[in-house]
Length: 276
Image (cartoon, rainbow, N blue to C red; front, side, top):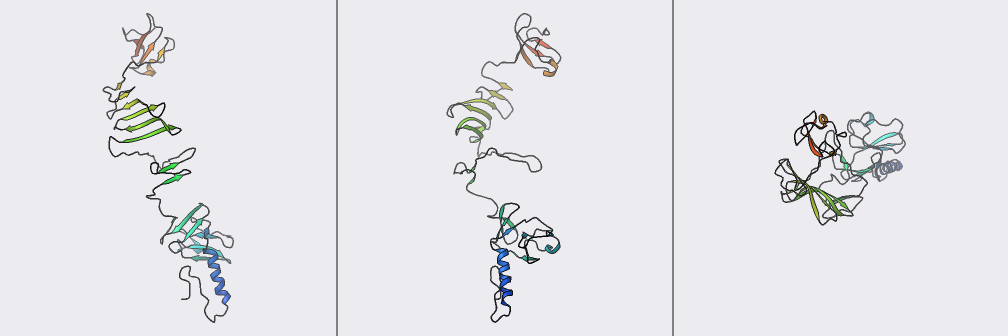
């Protein structure tokens, strides 16, 4: 063998003249490949004035002296670009990304491979068997990739829960989602133990408030409801409010009365006379 099996470093031959040439070549390769740190893996044109020892991973579509050398390590040594073929398992720190990459035999990938089927992921936090993804940060951003973005919460069956829980000191205060049924609900709590069902939206769009879990009409309340109260002078525009809107008029002639909009004017529900 004339070269080492892994890094392909040249051996000194017995009785070889000018042994320093072979030795220096091996040292040059070691300097380029051991503790490998490259400046970039996305530069397609070799830099015009590289510093001695500067290294890159050659990307697809490279030009000049890097043309056709995709995936190789290009190291500028002693005034020329030396190109070294990577072997599966090599790792390289990519400086302009601050990431560690590994060569899988065909391409450079993020070291460790794709992040798939990891048992726990903690970002500035410790994940556990219940909270397998844990994030401790001022904010969490889930951005679109060219269009929209959906956050999906899937449950096994209608009787299970798919919800978002809001906590104070790890004690629940509000929960929204499909908790125990397929009806969308909004629940609140003062202590994380006793919960009040504030809002329920059934699959047909009917809304129940104040604990009504199976609304039978468009808006179903278990008790009295209150509409906005105005003086005659303070009434909003009936046209802007739209036909069918209702308000309470506190100082109408004859006393307080409910009024509805006909699309143009406010009329008393008692006799349909325009509020004056």
